[in-house]
Image 1 (spheres, one colour):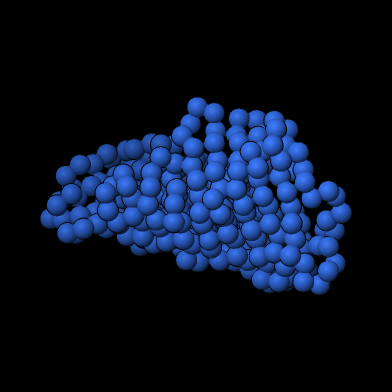
Image 2 (spheres, rainbow, N blue to C red):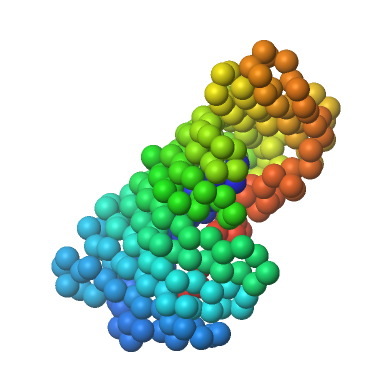
Amino acid sequence: MGVAGSAYGYARLGVGIVERWLDVPITFSPVIPCPGGGSMTIELTDRNADRSLDPLDTVHFHWDRCRVQDTTTTGVVRVELREATRSASGYDYLLTITVADLRIERDGQPSATVNFIAQVHYTHTGTFDRVEVSNAVFDSGQVIGDTGTATVNVDYRLDGAAQTYQYEVHGTVSSGGLGGEVQFSTPAPFTGVIGEYPAAGRLQVLGNANSGARLAEEGAAAGDPATVLVELDTNGDGVADASEPRLAWAGVVSAQLFAAYPDQVTVIVPMP
């Protein structure tokens, strides 16, 4: 859930950059001082020379020891806008986001260096938001304090009219903490009311020799929206060797992941 959440967070960062800069003339100084020291530089690969982000343009953000509140950031984020379509009912973006050696240091926490690339498709209407993250690849630091690589796919749909969401993920993660590679998927997508933890769904994790784990709204947890069932089968015999029937969702992922799209908290990267 942490790896998928990180991939979704960086996808949202890319979408946010497009929403902020699409068709907005970049007329200010490209070097911007940060409140706590350091700087951020904005560069635009501008194919039609109109000094704004358009389809087939790429905007580059370079952070150099940029400090905002308790966070210091160094590294590069690039967003290539491949397609952008607007209509009376909403808009549709197709983009590639690349995170290159982005080092994030928060006071009192381990630092993380992230390398990441993903194709992102974002669709918005008056009542519906959908973010599709295709073949996102982490080759370092997908989770703070761990090492390894990951390939992640996310399909997240929020229906503002029905006030519900559906969250699906699948991919692979190699982890220094786990000492190997696992595959994960949601054979039953997580679903629920926007703003609340899931009321249904299951995440399945498979490792070597049929070992595995699941995170599911089943059993006693199904009647408690604040908890989720976790089971671990270490030897692949189909019998749980360890379980927690009512693990607090708050210890797995922030409730803000399931908030309305505009209210979700994305990756904390300083922006002007």
